Image (tube, rainbow over all chains, first blue to last red; front, side):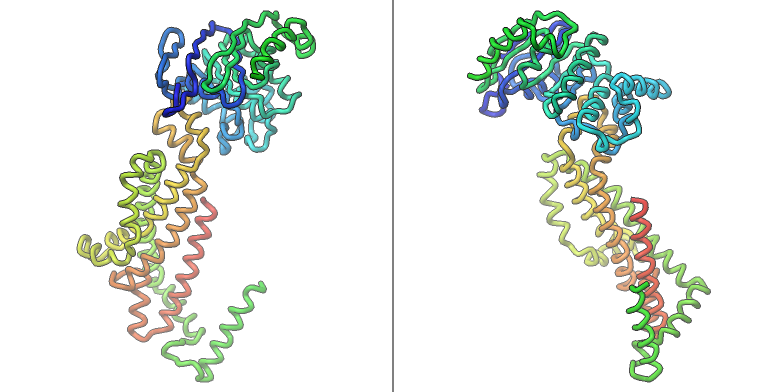
Length: 239
Length: 235
């Protein structure tokens, strides 16, 4: 992938199995977001190929939902929380009264039932990101693409959402590609972690995380294997 | 209430001045005569009819300009490529004073509503198209991403995402245009179109009935203010 003369990603090749949680971690400017936008179909490829279920990606699709990092910009400020989620269902041609039922169900799942009539600007960052996740889940995507979704949240909120997203992804058997710059987050969440190196963005290392699920914020992060992965990958991000 | 002090004092001074013979009667009617002329004009319906005629032209011209302006502005805002082609033509047409088109409009449509409304529409189109273009171009770039990844059709992208996101600034353009619409409508009537408040005022002036002229002038101020007030409430 290149923008004009500048190669942004080169020789990035990987596979994600159905239902797998893949984390992509790398220093800033290594092309993580570009990679995600390519997977979403929001950017055209300059070379190479992306296939989902054997079908080449030619543009955006509702089967691939995206959760953007900048939640405050990705939500529609003139719609309520329920309205934002309903928009996604409407796009999927889910008619009333089914739509309202689904909205309630999704808001319940994300712990937003009391915020349904509020506007995004009235909510905290964590709550806004929950709305975005609910909106993405409303699409019932096969592939959930998340671009540093918790990067701007405080540590406690982030940990809570990490666990919720893993739980929901497992429940819905959704495949997830999760971009982050936080190595520990990548190891904690992922079945597979890809480390990108910059200039041009390329795969520095690919590891399978063999820590059983469910994982826990305390024990997993103190697990010997967790620390071993962290040691191994930490060096790669320093270079 | 304190804001009314100056107008009331002025009116009192005006009335006293003309009764004392200080102010010339043919250009400064007495406020009491103006009030009588106004009451008579309302009573026999002439002022109301003229008001309706002016508003009919101003608002229909405004409405055409709003539809065309928002549509063109949205297209120009979305497509820089089209903007590069059309932009220079817009910049060339925009500085033409709309009243300079009155002779052309008269040739095309003759006297009457259509001619007046067309000049109003020309004048109103520019602020709307410019504001809409800027508004659409300035919306949060994340929102079109959201629209695209939901695979919304072009129409629903416009309806559900682009236009609502741009509405705030489009409204500014509409407000500017509405104020212009009344100015241009009255101007066309004063210059040559035989209908509406502008024509009625110029008629009163030529008949040396400055009382009627003042009554209509003040009335025009009131309805102009009302128009803006109503627009502020609904937009």
